[in-house]
Amino acid sequence: MQKQYYVYIATNPRNTVLYTGMTNDLNRRLYEHQNKLLSGFTAKYNVCKLVYYETFNSPTEAILAEKKIKAGSRLKKLRLIKSINPEFKDLLKL
Image 1 (cartoon, rainbow, N blue to C red):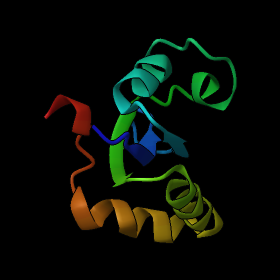
Image 2 (cartoon, rainbow, N blue to C red):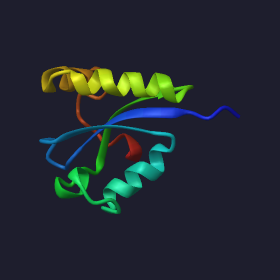
Image 3 (spheres, one colour):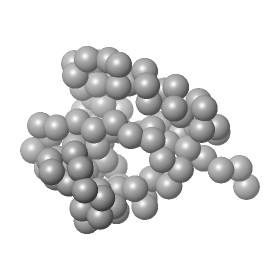
Image 4 (cartoon, rainbow, N blue to C red):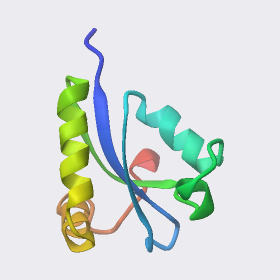
């Protein structure tokens, strides 16, 4: 089975903070965010809700996609999220 890589955008419960990241295990990574297992931005701003993700077959593709999203404005990120998740539902709980 081929390994998969994910680029994701997560937010806080009030959808006021956006965090873009990359991982090879989306469930584990969101568990870490939700339980504040890693100190830093996501723990400080209570980033715990997955609102967008893309899947890639190589880490290089995922890193390039992450950089592209991070380079975009907040408005571009919001448009990207709303293109697949207009209600900002937690995609891990669907």
